[in-house]
Length: 392
Image 1 (cartoon, one colour):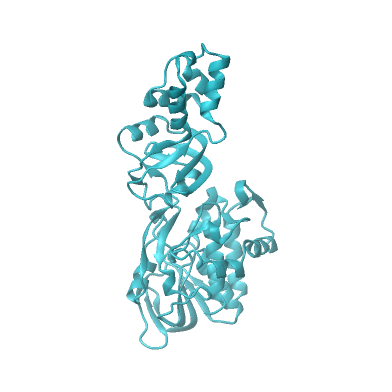
Image 2 (cartoon, rainbow, N blue to C red):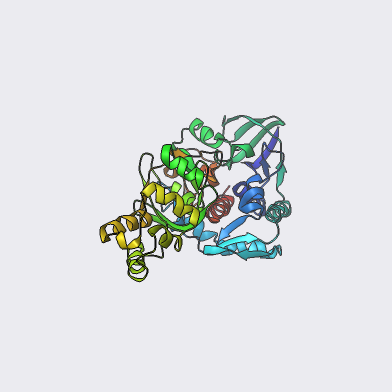
């Protein structure tokens, strides 16, 4: 039986950050994970370069049943704090669009940095360790594992959500929360491609590989980034962003030309080149493959001179506000993150500790706090892990 101050379940971004901070406080800390290697989601993120935070991270970039829950942790450990750690380790980085920060070389630089910090703080990491049972028979937690029993005063659950199961992701953290009587906001795949059926699926399939800058909306929420047609539906940053807000059975609106008032552009073209085909005029605004397919789908044909304002308005409305109803998403298989999780009403926003079970903490993706695409979910991992690490 190994007796610990802090046992962290999960060797990903949030778990390692928490263990580092707890170790700095002189706590006896062990991180366990069932995987062969630590922080696999960090390794594959950002195309292997890890979009480790965002310069513009703020509470407005997160979804939660309680939008204010993330404020405390984000304020006490900011993107600039994490960037300072990256620079301390002399990891080269660069900014991409919209404040997204990436490693110049490899995501493994971030993993090495965290493992180095963990070692410096006196923490330990134990991999390929299966959790068989968790209980709290007295003031301490008892955890039965494939490598022997463990006891700890503080138990930190940083096991993530079920997104990307091929990396070993599971819903274990939610099961553990329920075991101890905590409520869980039903989880679902987020930051995930949307799928379609029938004619729209066929249309997207024929356009697979075509990408455009688009403005995608659901209700009052709008994102403007790249949109990509796939064999199953729509993907790209704008679609992944809106997927976190989309509700089943409801349409999304796609503006394929956010910089252009299509009605005015076509009226101008009709005045200047009346003999030009409508399809040719649209080809100056959108990729030809897209125009070819939409011309058939929307019934666009004939010379500009023969099109009334009513027809041009209809064309413009279709291109500036294309209404599409997804049938679903690609699910956890390709989702970058999980929406929902341990209900924030069950946790202290200052410490991440359960209000019902002393010594039990939930951090990172296990909690009902989900960031936008662009480094925000990693920032939540750093901030929530740091917050818990000050108190475990």
